[in-house]
Image (tube, rainbow, N blue to C red):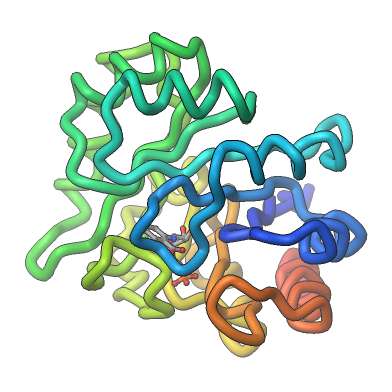
Length: 220
Ligand SMILES: O=C(O)c1ccccc1N[C@@H]1O[C@H](COP(=O)(O)O)[C@@H](O)[C@H]1O
């Protein structure tokens, strides 16, 4: 049986980009609540976008070093269905914030030079043991500014046994999506800058070609 690789389109800031992602078949929509990001959306903007997200499409709120109180305030206004912690948060901070809003969460791990597959297995194990709200790890390249840098990391570092539970991100695009899915066989892929016209502005053509490239790999 072929696995259907889930696709998250991250960094949506505008209604027309949201519509394009949904029409193309995205499984998840990422909203960046990090005010230093060019893809930042306020809780109010996010709240205005959320009603257009249909059932069975997950809304993901991305946070970088936010306090539990800040997460509570944002989710109170914009009730996303899942959290993504993409900064330097500790395990305790992630678990505490997720518990405060009773939402499942993903932990982004930025692949620092020297990080090994064993480190990834250890991270996953520690988070899983720490909270029932932990949903999985997202792997990204290590870039300045925490994320959205369009940089690819060495996929061969991902242990085979971990791949089916991983969200793969970092520099994915129409050009490498098929190869990424064929090589890694991740649970899901996450893309932001690779489907943009300019920072924070998505390209509907690139979104639909990206999802088509992922689907093509599923039969490869
Ligand atoms: O998109 C951002 O601006 C961002 C800022 C801070 C942390 C994470 C951010 N985005 C996430 O980074 C990865 C990789 O993005 P890209 O595809 O390489 O551009 C992805 O998960 C984004 O959601």
